[in-house]
Each structure stands twice: as structure tokens, then as C-alpha cells.
Image (cartoon, rainbow, N blue to C red; front, side):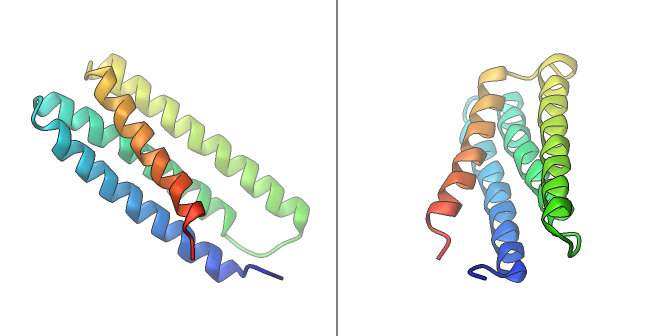
Length: 121
């Protein structure tokens, strides 16, 4: 086995913490444009971090066979997309926060996700 379960948990935790740091940085960067933009950017990035936490919690919840691991991964991804899409609906339509800031924060948090796998060593 090339990758242990503990290594995957550490990587997931590192990704979540980096995404939360990006949420803070995005909020600070958009603070120059206004408070509503800062909240939208931070909330968009925090949605991705919350979704990643849900996938990680679901996927690393226990041992099992390949079928069980696949079902946990799929349900975790389903929960992640419910959180992200539902959170965006709340941010954009209920709170009426600026969409560009929210989507920029979301994209920045996903960039961390992609880069974390590139430089996981």
C-alpha cells in the first residue's frame, strides 16, 4: 500500500486549514471594496472548506472494503455539493451579497485544493 489512511487524514486536515486561511485572506483582500464584498468572499471560500471537511469526515469514518469506501466517497461528494450550492443560494439570493466576490472566494479555495495535491510532499 503506497498511502496510509493516516496520511490521507493529515492531507485532508491540511487542505481544510489552508482553505480556511484562504477564506480569511480573501475576506481581507475584498475588505478594500467594502464589508459586504469581504463577507461574500470569505463565505464563498468557507463553503468549500466546509464541503471538504464533510467529504473528509465521511470518507475517513472507518475501515471497510472497496465498495464501502466508494459509497462513502460518493455520499461525501454529494453532501459537499449540497453544502456549496445551498450556501451559494443563501449568499447570493437570501443575503444578496455580491456574486463576484463570493465566486472569487470559492475559486480561490478550490485552487488551494488543487495545489495541495500537487505539492503534498
